Amino acid sequence: MNRVAALKVGGLLALAIVALLLPLVAPDPATTNIAVFTVMYIGLATAWNIMGGYTGYISLGHAAFFGFGAYGLGLMLVHLNLTPGYGPFFLVPVAGLLSALLAVGIGWIALRTRAATFVIVTIAFMFMMQLLAENLVKVTGGGGGLGLPYSHDWGGDFFNTPYYYAMLLLAVLGLFISWWIRRSKFGLGLLAIRDDEDKALAVGVPTRAFKLTAFVISAALVGMIGGVYAYYVTYIYPQFVFDPLIGISMVLMAFLGGLGTLSGPVIGALLLEPAQLEFAYRLGASRLYLVFYSAVFLLVILLLPRGIVPSVADLLNRRRARTVVS
Image 1 (cartoon, rainbow, N blue to C red):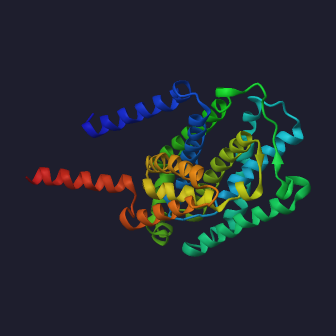
Image 2: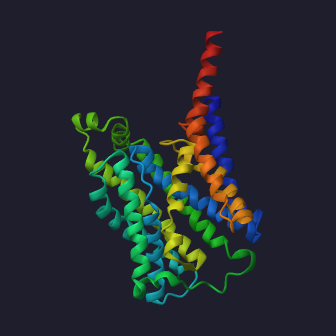
Image 3: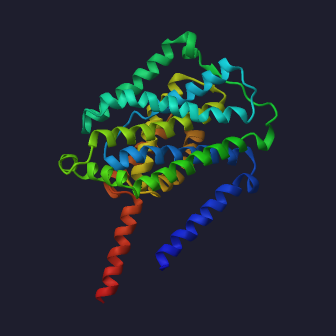
């Protein structure tokens, strides 16, 4: 094993140990709350990257699946009268399945378009879902929101812990699926679509089926994370779960870390989400924290258009080449 590979393995093991032990080492609610949202966005950015990073189809409307998963789990908990606790977590895959079914319908239409048109169509679908949630008052509660049951047995420092591990499990699942896709024939087909879709179609890649499959997998993961989020916050509103900022955050984190890479979305989320939470806490009333997001987006586009991981890899390769030449 060479030095680079050893560093990667060592870094992954260290990160895994920190992630597993964090609620035990720092159990205070403030820290675990930040950890829940950071791990949530690791999962969201990774899930988005399966579609946007591997195929090159930039969706800004993935918050539609996040909100649909949140309402899906919330409505199941309310109407099935389930006892709060660990049981509702077993319904999270159902929320993912519902989001996947929605993605089949949306993808069937949206994936007939490309480039900027695809971006606009996905945003339009997201706002359509938001309007439906606001107007179907008898189902969703409308603008008044939907309350979810929560466990009174979880209190104090322990309250955030079950949700943290649920989010961590979904993030690991997303990373595993992303890793598998990246090394499969399916993944090669997605990368071929990203490089040149017409050429990929000409050499026999079933581009439409591959794009739709990636879209559905991505949506299912996002929907499951949305379900855990709803159970965590216990009260959801249409404007907060069908929120354009959620979709933009996924994209920005994947861009910052590196599109189409496995570790890029993780790095992007680890850097951005704690900073975003801090800015929102201090400047939330004025919403000036949105300026921070805009500034980060501009800096990434101007200085690191390929993201941190590809840029660092290029830098290391250039240094290695100079060392060999000298």
